[in-house]
Length: 430
Image (spheres, helix red, strand yellow):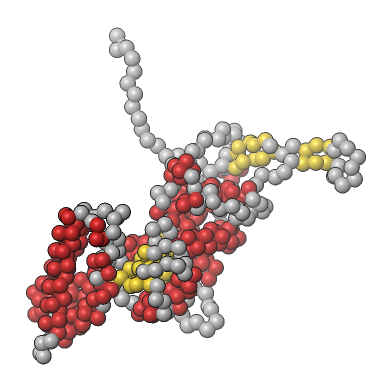
């Protein structure tokens, strides 16, 4: 005799199915005698991202995310689509990307304008290959620069690694800002930037200093114990700063912090003073080993930039934030070797900027991108005139909550004629 009731169990499945929408547009004979009205009137065509292109917004959303967020080469994406029953040529997608690149230019300008109003930045750069011959340039080595602030992650593609790139980026920095801090490594381009801009203070990276001592320890085994003493001192510095930040109230100035913070702040200062005194004492030794001279000389020369975080607890001790922002582009670079042309390299920088900023605000990149591209399609294949509904800092809380969720997908009623290209058809009457 069966036991009464049922027991429910759940199995999670993912099904991907390409389909074609057949849009049937009504046509009418004109009911008036107006000469300017054609004899047969047809309903307006459905919005398209690219005029006359059969590829819908959902396809371009997948293409952009697959390449610039998940780092997969376009030919592999085409192969996956073919396995789903949708054969697409790589040249078709490349041509389409070239056409839609301009849609993101106003968005990137808005990101840069927003970032130039902020005061704390993390900066770094990495190589990027661009396989197009450019007049006056030797080789294919370009550079991808990143600048991350509180609300924007901005990437810039440049043919050089010179100081002109960060200078161009910060040229429009809001003039009434003071004590702008850029957390970076000790690369000379950033030093040139700060030298020509009194508004900018460089905060150097302790992780790079630690790396100096570790490298020297490997190269000079007889100095390993001495080098590790400094590595341990830097580790203690990180620990003391973390303890200080645990009781830091970012709404209060330094002089009005709690007694617990003041105590830990003094412990940090004492440790730094001891490190500096040891550095100075070693540098006075007449027979100091050349390896010790090199690492301690660099530490001494960059001491002011390395201690910016002491009086400004909001400033990080290292540049790991910017380096993390380069991980996704580096994965893409390793998978598809860079860009085949200058325009595609610039598109890569734009898409990295847009998608990483979207992620910074905890928005769903699939939802945001599909909404943005649909707005472009509705605007005749052009970027929306009003970007406020797509800029995270201008969105209402309700809009942000909506775009933070996954896209709501409604399963279409697949037709009964799946033979053509192996792709089901869906009728859509408008």
